Image 1 (cartoon, rainbow, N blue to C red):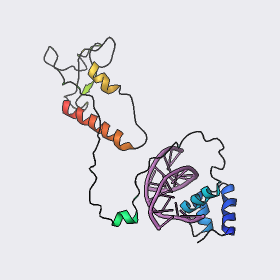
Image 2 (image 1 turned 30 degrees about the horizontal axis):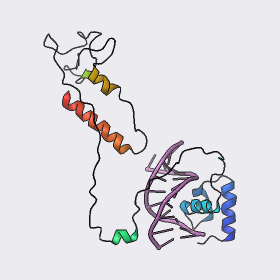
Image 3 (image 1 turned 90 degrees about the horizontal axis):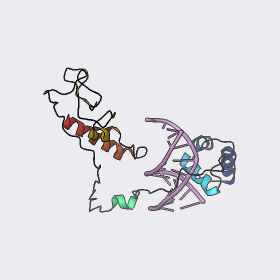
Image 4 (image 1 turned 90 degrees about the vertical axis):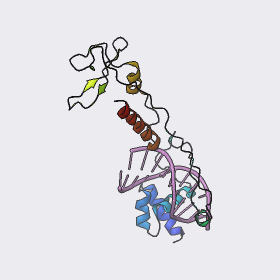
Amino acid sequence: MAWTDERVEQLKKLWAEGLSASQIAKKIGGVTRNAVIGKVHRLGLSGRAAPSRPSSRPARTPKPRVTAAAASAPAKAKAPAARKPVPPPVQAPDPEPLPNGEFATVLTLKDSMCKWPIGDPASGDFRFCGHRTKAGDAYCEAHAQIAYQPQQKRKRKTSDATAALDAIQATRRVNF
DNA sequence: CCCTGATTCGC
DNA sequence: GCGAATCAGG
């Protein structure tokens, strides 16, 4: 289907009425919403009801699209795929028994003791870290680092953030 | 997962 | 010029 004058006119009208690209595509027929959007852009009438669109889409860094040529091409060298992975999950110290040989429990936990939970609260082996804390802090220094990690890089591309979190949790499992 | 528009780029 | 693929977000 080509963009005849008539179809373009319908497009303009419907777009001006606020219909979405997919709705217009269905109404006109023979085109996809992508085609509609593409045409809208080419006609220069995008962004209809929002004159001031300050931010949102600074610049894209697209991936190399697979082309027919590339797909059928040799593709010899597989990407090295240097997985630049998650940084640095903060290392936590091993739980250290208190002087009395036990770990801190809810009964022995004092204000100056780290309240980082260890083990399963639902079972009998639940304890607290018990390391000294800095005046009024809930956690010892190492656990405070874990507890109060600046949330960075959330949103967008969950892969990295998720991997980081997984790594942290893995660390916990190992250390506790 | 559904949807939206935006952008790029091979054709 | 066209629009699929992709991206970024709701």
